[in-house]
Image 1 (cartoon, rainbow, N blue to C red):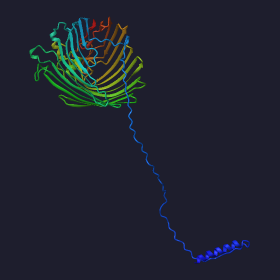
Image 2 (image 1 turned 90 degrees about the vertical axis):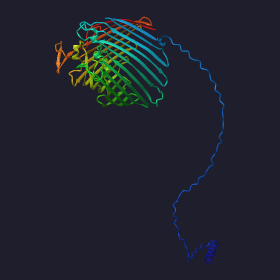
Image 3 (image 1 turned 180 degrees about the vertical axis):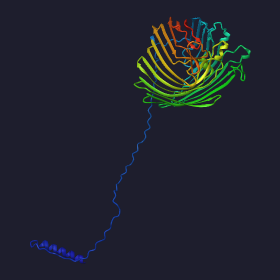
Image 4 (image 1 turned 180 degrees about the horizontal axis):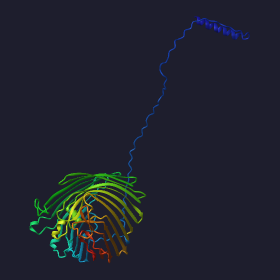
Amino acid sequence: MRKLLLIALFLGVSLTHFGQVEKRDTFFVDVVAKRQIEPATRITNNPKLIDTIITHKAIEYPLLNMKYETSIKLEPIVPANVKVSGDNKLPKLYNGYVKAGISTPFMPMGEIYYNNTRSRKYVYGLNIKHLSSFGEIKKYAPAHFDKTSYNAFGGIKELTYSLMGDLRFDNYGVNRYGVLNPKASLDSTVQRFKELGGSLTFMSNRMDSLRLNYTMQVKAYHLSDAQPKDANSASFYGNESNFSSLNNFWYRKNNNLFAADVNFITNHFTYGKKGQQLNVIDTAIDVSNTIVSFKPSITTYAKSNRLKVQVGMDISGSFSTNNKIYIFPNIDVKYSMFENVLIPYIGLKGGLKQNNFKSLTSQNAFMQSNPTLNNESNYNVFVGIKGILTKRMEFNVSATFAQVANKALFVSDSASAHRHRNQFNVVYDTMSVFTAEASLSYQMNEKLKLDGIGRFFNYQANNNPYAWNLPTYQFIIRGNYVLNKKLIFHVDINGEGGRKAQVFDSTLAKVTKEDGKLVKDLGLIIDGNIGAEFRYTERISGFLQINNVAAQQYFRWYNYPVQALQIMGGVTIRF
C-alpha cells in the first residue's frame, strides 16, 4: 500500500512539473522506507570453454568392380649372329701334346698330356712325365738319376658344386754320388722313392650370399724308399703313410667374411720292424704323429673396400710321443692408398708344420732313411708395402721377424763313410730368423716380362753356430720375351751365398772350427739358364734350353757338385 502511494505521488509531481513548465520549480521529497537486499552467493566452479562439436556424416563411396581385359602378344626374338674374327677368336684347344727332348750330357726327357676340350660340366685328363740323367761327374761316384710321374684327374662342375679328384704315382731314383770314388757300384749308392697317392675335393658354389659355402678335401699317400737286398736288413727302409682332411667354411654378410678351417693330418712312419735292431746305428722306428687344427677368422672391409682387416687364431694340437696344444695369432691388415698405387700391410701369424719323410726327402734326397720327425712351430711378424711405380712396373718391400722351433737342418752323417756313401742326418734347432725382401716386376702386355727378387736372411740358432746349408742372401732374375709370336726367349738367373756345412774332417781345405764344430763354406751359387722356343706352326714347335751357362760346378749340398753345363733340345707337338 505504501509503495502504491509513493508511486502515485511521484506521478502527480511529475505531471504538475510538466504542466507548469514556465515556473520551473524544484521539489525535493524525502522518503523513509525499509529495503531488503538479498545475500550474495559465490560461484565455486572455475570458468571453462564449452565448445560445440558439429559432427558430419561420413561419406561412403561404393567400390567399383572393374575388370579390364588385356591381351599379350609375343614377338619372337631372332637369335643374334656373333661373328668373331681376327685376334678376338677363341684359341683352338687341342686334346693333348707330346714333348720330347735330349740333353748333353746324356739326359732324355719326355712328357705326354691329354685332356678334354671345353666342357661346361666335365673335366678329365692324363699326364705322364719323365726325366733322367746318365752323366758322370769327374772324380765322383756315378751321378745317375731318373724321375717318372703319372697323374690322372677328373671332375664334375655343376652350378651349385664341383667335385674333383686325382690319382698319381711317382717313381724317383737317385744315386748318393757324394763320395770320391768313380768306380763305386750302383747297388751301394742307389736310392729310390715310390709314392702312390690321390685326393678328392668337394666345393660348394652357392650364389646366395646368405648361404654357407665350404670346401672339403681328403688326401692320402704312401711313400717308401729302396728296400735293402740283404735279407737281414730287408725291412730297414723308410715306409710312410699319410692321410689328411682339409676343410674350409666361409659365410659372407655385408662387408664381413666369417671363415673357419678345420684340418686333420695324421702320419705313420716305420723303419724296420718294431723292436728290431740292425746294428748299433740302425734301430727300428715306429712313430705316429697327428695334428688337429681349428682356425676361425673374421675378415672385414671398410673405407670403400680400401681397408682389409683379418683377425683370427690357429688352435692346433700335436699328438705324438709328446702331446701339446698351440695357440697362434692370425692378424693381417692391408690398406689401399691412392687407388691401389700403394698398399702398406702388417701382420702377426703363426702355425704348426708337420715334418714327415716326404717333406724332408723333397728337400734333400740324399738323407738317411731313418730320420727323426718333429713338428715345426713358428711365430712371425711382418710389415711391408707394395704398389705400382708406373702402369707397367710394380714393387714389393717387406721385412719379417720369426721365431722358429724345431727347424729341420741337414748335416753330413759321419758314420756313413764306412758304407762308401755320403748321407745326411736331420737335426733340429730353435732359432730367430730375420728376412728382408724386395722385388720389382715389369710387364709390357704379353711381349715382355721381367722379375727381380732379392732376399737377405739372418739366423740366430740356439744350438748351432750356423743354420746349416741355408743361405744368408739370395737373388732371382727372370725374363720372358716374345718376338713376332713365333720366337720366345726366356732367362732365369739364381744366386745364393753364405751357406755353411758341418763336416767331420779337419784336413779339408777352408775348414774352420766354431763352437766346437767344424765348418766349411759352400761358396757362391750362380746358376744361369737361358732358353728359346720357335713356334713353327700352331701345332708344332721346337725348343732349346741351356742350363748352368756359367759352367759353375757349385755344391748344392756338401760334396754334391752339380753338372757343369747342360744343353737340351727338343720338339713339342699338339694333337
